[in-house]
Amino acid sequence: MSIAGMYMLNSGVYRPEKIQQALDMLYLDRKNEFRELSKILLTEKALNAMPRWKEFVLNFSLDVEDAFKTWSGQSPLASSSPQKALTLLRQLGRGKTSMNQLAHLLNISYNLSCEFKEIYKRLK
Image (tube, rainbow, N blue to C red):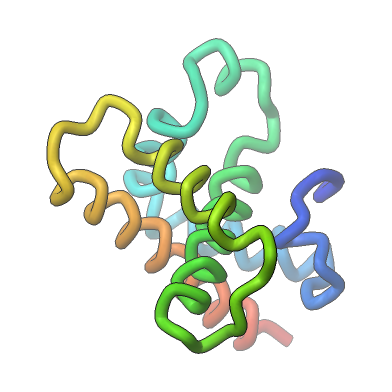
């Protein structure tokens, strides 16, 4: 598995073999959530051309959780935090007509991230 370019997964906190195992386990239960986010984040052409789309969605979800920690004051404010927040919101908010739709996607991303971390932690 290649995690090149996926800075949240490539942070040194995670080992590639455990990432793949945890991702496979998570994907079994959360296929619909992965598909919903992939349709928002990637065009159909990009989705078909991207063999590592699940890793991309997971990396995005980890990024959302990290941003939430900053928004809630659990992590210190970084110099790139405003740009990161705007980018996340613009990616998910494209084509949405209400805050409820945006909040739904943020919740999906956050939950995927938390579940991945829990699965990862329990793997030996």
